[in-house]
Image 1: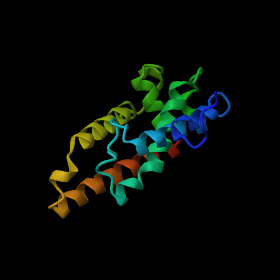
Image 2: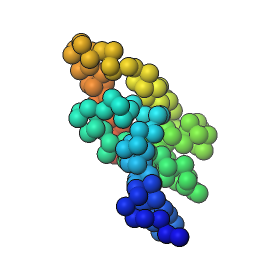
Image 3: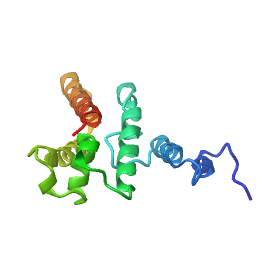
Length: 155
């Protein structure tokens, strides 16, 4: 029996094996829409218009890490972005001997630490303080801009 196309839970299965990237993106968006995405700062119950604008970035980031994680061959660092090199170092797929910059190994853990910190921050407790909410949103913006910059930068 074929799943109904209108049922978004099954939508990504139409692309499995045919277009993995599209399938992954659809699954990610479904997790956001269903509120099942607990590892990110985006909580469906707290989502406001400004945080919804992070969805494309989170989608790009998750697809990037998925592709890096499922790569069979690790290219030489000079052919990768700074984000990729840092990720592969954290996952022990690149040794410290091939990376000359002492900051690179710290970048992926930095993003993970920021994400963990921000995911524990309860936005509803601070809605009465606009300065705190603005600082939170500014930290998210800076974090995402840094990630984008490092993804575009070749090692």
